[in-house]
Image: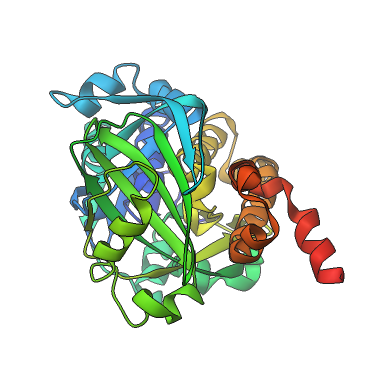
Length: 379
């Protein structure tokens, strides 16, 4: 497998310099110092600051600790680490707090800079290069292993989609990113679902500081065709969103991240390996952000692949072990993500059928309410 010989230093080419690619590159280089590891990143994702953020819970923090026990000190340096222990759920009628699996928030620029530094410190070669199918083929021909870590629109995944058994589910949902800055103190993870004339608006937010949160607003595709949303960008919708989402005691003061409305696409593969290629992160499996597993699943797949390479006698064996481990670890989040997406696609009907006092519990436990959809459809 691959093109290296016994006299050549093995080369692993990583396509994509996001969380999955950089975490894997640093991990595999640390475990295999004699292996040459090159990360190809078209947009210098690793040093871009898009004003967005991540929340890492127990699993993600554990995986960072395995790579670097002092990661928090290096990740945050002089910045505040926002620990999250509570989750706040709200509708315009009610609010409830729940325990949150201890986590913390970090800006995208902070995490990318930290992961980039970790990779460089281990001797990983970072290259800016926009790839096409032909350049991908050339890189693969000179590599022992090619790793697709290039996200939901992965060129590696697309090029070999039949071999991976790749499937995509494009949700009938639209979302965009915002920052909320206000005088109101907020240290909880927030999950809101507010009824507007156009449809139900959901808000997911995580604190970056006590007065600043990274926010995802999501609505149905149909909602964006109506009323105050029709033909409007996320930035143009800010005044209306502030008004609707402030109706239950919050001081919502959104600022658009300058990004459009996105359609969420969930990726699934039957196998994350093919010959001398492996997929990690969103290139293999992408989950709805309501699960809170995006960056943790990226680290998990990178960790699994690096460990399989380290303990296996050859790459063929390593890729077989990785394929088995990856499929096992993806079963539960794949099912839960699909259930959550299908519930959210029908959120307007759910809220019509659910009395206001029960809407928070229905929204919070959405993945468990698929019987509601099936029953209503059958009727």
